[in-house]
Length: 135
Image (tube, rainbow, N blue to C red):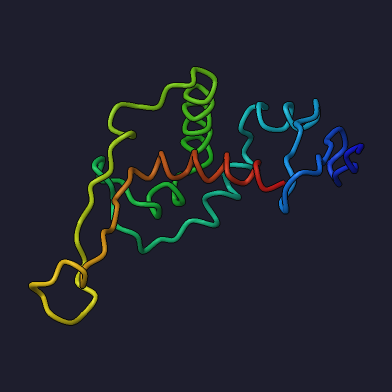
């Protein structure tokens, strides 16, 4: 059975399971691999919450949001370099996990959940990439 065309040009939906399996088209490859532009950066920053704890590097989202145009351009260049090289910065592969008590008996481990603290630059880059995958 031939697959149905997906909404995205160049892509083809393949029947086989409930969700379908997506066969990547050339336009999708171009979109996923293009340079990060200022629109991508500003959109991702706009979606990030200010009240989150800092990662190992100590930077918070609000700091990046308040950078002037020149510094945001520098940040964009750094993110593009990381994306093109395919290697994240040292420390980005590590999360600090803290137990947060949910309530109940403090002696019972089931009453805790882990909260991971990641560097804000890593979160920014992954937000940009996730946005591209959602398109």
